[in-house]
Length: 297
Length: 205
Image (cartoon, rainbow over all chains, first blue to last red; front, side):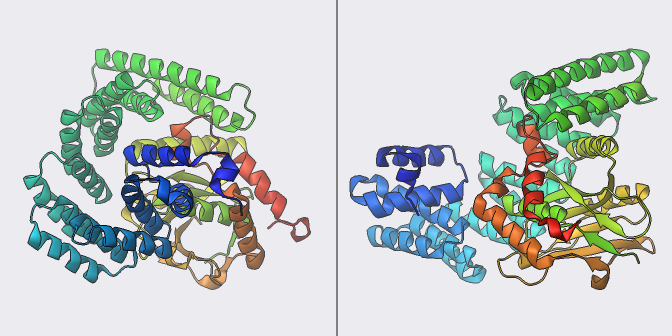
């Protein structure tokens, strides 16, 4: 089997830089990280300098994701040797136990970190992840709420909580979490769009109007967000079709839906140009838009 | 109740879908190109989502588009599949039951298929699926003997071949299509590759 550097004709520096990019952008492409990282560690360790420790950490986590306990273990040993009393390394050891489904042992490790340092957020979050892995959603939600009372600015935690609430069909609370996220990240089109989806799911005229507004906001922030475009189309169509709205509201929403339709058609026509493969999906969208227009007018 | 036949194509794509997103719950629709009545032949499937399965807008959108595509290609939606993120729990979620219920309104021998994550390992001798059918106003476990998976060994080997050739990465679900609309959620390319591997001597596997 040829090496990554042979296969892709890359130097060790390029491999190292790729790993850094994935690290900084928090990608979870674990198989790739393992492939590139393992080769880097085995062949070029001496050239990496102090970077090697953070690479060991990155590769170890990716290895756990790919069930490569052999690789994870050897990375962990290197880190333990270099940083014998580190809480950060202890947390990695805990993650390995989690991957092996030894949750009690993992919890003991995290509890010992928290005894030493009660403000250690990483250990607390791992404990919540264990609850999630065990399917104990209500406990995970409770713990996460407590955590957020103390660490109100933790975006990752707010998002995790919104996901948990969505899974439990508690849309009102999910919306609350997304509102927090939108407040602190007003330029993030994904939060707007997710909030709109939750509102749409809650249903009722008021929520549909809110949904439409936030789909529109998401589009303002990123006009290529197809989910927001379709969402705008669907919410406007539903409002226009409702018997409870005034003539003006109906007229406005018919206009919004028509605008969305033209944008969707345009996007699909551009996508379909010259590509035989997606002719089917393009045709399906065209017919869907046509049929929904008929029911609306 | 009735017999259900699951084709190699449908099984392979479901399996690939679940494997592509091991940390997420995934779902999709089961299709049939044969006429209604008699045994249910699941000849194909459309992988739908791997995020926010229980949120309405994208699910509604996907169902509508698949409906349209089915009428264009003489297929019917005959069932729904889901694989839970938590591999040890293969019970149908409220969302799964809701969608299956909707499908049942149009197709009275609709099936609900849950993928059993714990049985998805190489060398497992049992198909990792649990099927439910509508009986007495609820979804009940289907008798295993009424579920046909022709040429099981061959199906497994085809799935393995797809993994070793890297073709499993060709699978596009509806979610991925929305991220990049040049990707084809009807998976024409992947379907062709799978049908190539299904040996002609075995007829309609």
